[in-house]
Image (cartoon, rainbow, N blue to C red; front, side, top):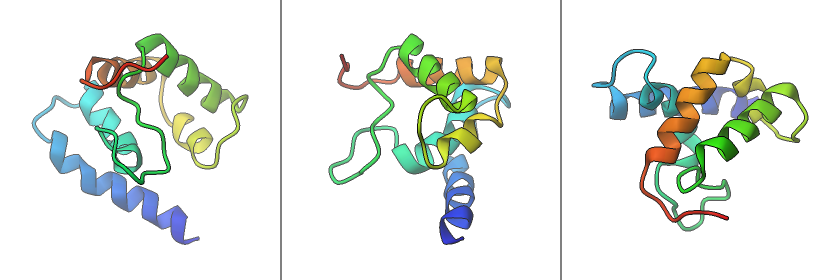
Length: 103
């Protein structure tokens, strides 16, 4: 129950970081992701960083979460709340951020 409240609270708290972005932009949509994953890799964070991945890999992961074909705790529920276009915007935003490229 606690985690069901904590995730939305963290997501809302992260919106101030992207307040200047236009509504619907990748940065605004990605604010929910950054609440847990962050923007830059952080030592001790159990969740994988999303920066450094290709747009195609991120989009494939997001679609798999939404379809329920990739095991997850909260990601299936979150991904189901986005359209294909929004998932593409999120993936594009993270792929454009600086970060160590992943294989």
